Length: 81
Figure 1 (cartoon, rainbow, N blue to C red):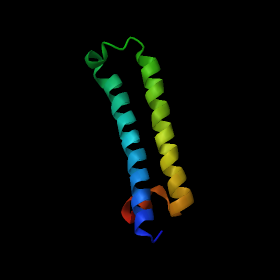
Figure 2 (figure 1 turned 135 degrees about the horizontal axis):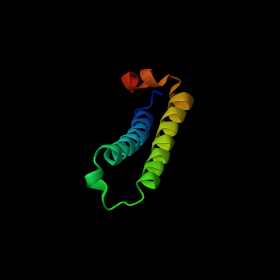
Figure 3 (figure 1 turned 90 degrees about the vertical axis):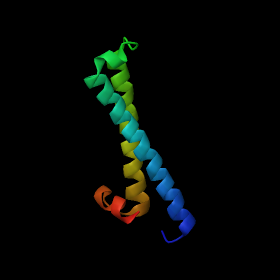
């Protein structure tokens, strides 16, 4: 991708998926390490499953963009974008 706008749009999409991924990881980490902070959630297992699904969706989106539009392995993309 050489178009500046295309690069900016791709970076924005990647950033959104990365933010979603980080949010899911933080949510799961909170549920697993700070039980006092999740007292309002009696269905913690269901909440972890939901966060895991969000995590999988974000990682899948990242990989799909990288594989189909950047032609690079995930490790290489962060350095190139």
